[in-house]
Length: 314
Image (cartoon, rainbow, N blue to C red; front, top):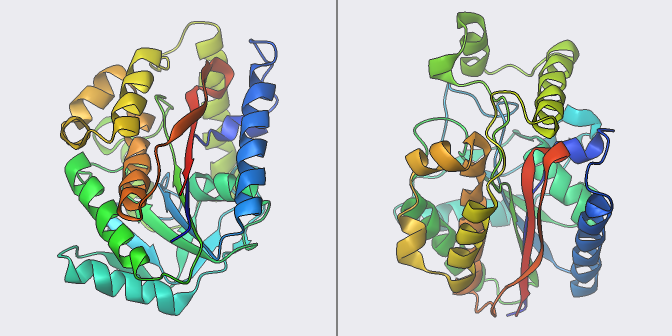
């Protein structure tokens, strides 16, 4: 069946006006993502399956699933991205959840999934709108401890791929959104104030003022990183390239062996999001995806992130 894979970093700092420190590097990333977008439109998918994280804008510690299938979804307006509903084929999404349960994955479902920049940035960049194509949103917990292991995420992605393999009349684009190495000032339950912990627990959409304050902290962290100061770990090119090498070879033993401790120590808190790449790749392998290629990689300090794009078409 026709299948396309795109894994891409999604730093919202690309939407800000932090001065560029590497002349032309941002333009090269945008050129690469525009090329991926052109290939997606030429492929003309009937369904986009989007594996993405959340940043405590839609999912909270009140009840944090490892995996969740959106039966209906709406984009938030964080980082000034236009919100609005995604075009979710509800019947197919429910069938997918049932299939995953049949493969021993107790996946959650949501009839009101809120998706933040972890999903809206790739949709806007790659498709041009939140609702241009039918989208199956698949949330993977990458922020809240305890997270699903890399082995579990890979098997989950493969199970989703087997479900999609039964939709032989559909042209499917798989998107993994997140990573690579980055260490934004994301609040953590064991290292934050009681008031912030309360917000991480309670399911409530941040106010405009709260969003602005959070975004200002991230922008300042990026400015500090450019100036080689501040508490955030810098992006780690060696780790990024090592991860992409494992992914490109689909070295399941090496991917399964990645630990949270390793990521926190050398790649930064945000790098947990590479789980979405692993899930998308695993789904693609079940669908007969050909060998992937690295379309782009570089560290862009003002975006706080190792920025990468990996793609394949079968």
